[in-house]
Image (cartoon, rainbow, N blue to C red; front, top):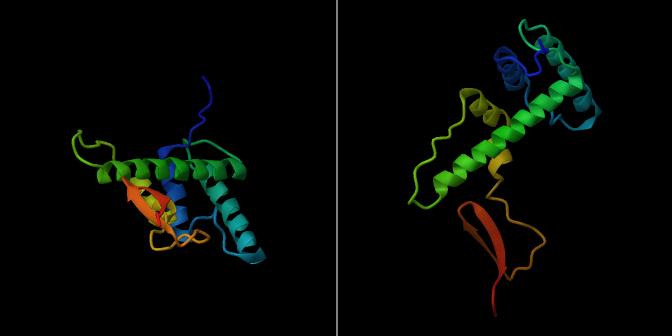
Length: 145
């Protein structure tokens, strides 16, 4: 029988609980001390996750990849759900929803990490541009004279 490659539900649960307590470790605080703290916490998290029975054992770098992949997948799913909800009617509603763990991932990384910060004006563009958003997709168009 092939060894288990995917983390167990218990490991995913422990991973999100740790991130809720300590923040997103993939985005450490600035400076050397912030990076050292994040590295120490990743070591602690790796030991914790590898000690969970019935799960997989991974290196620190592999657990970092699990977290990065989980965030990416959750951001994409959240964006698709949000885009579908803001679209015009006419079709069946989306049956896709975030799981409880995915909702917790969004809470840890912040909604602005997924949808961006709409209150921040783009810089470096001519003042003669107008921003237009349709179904969650924003574009800048030159205003005619």
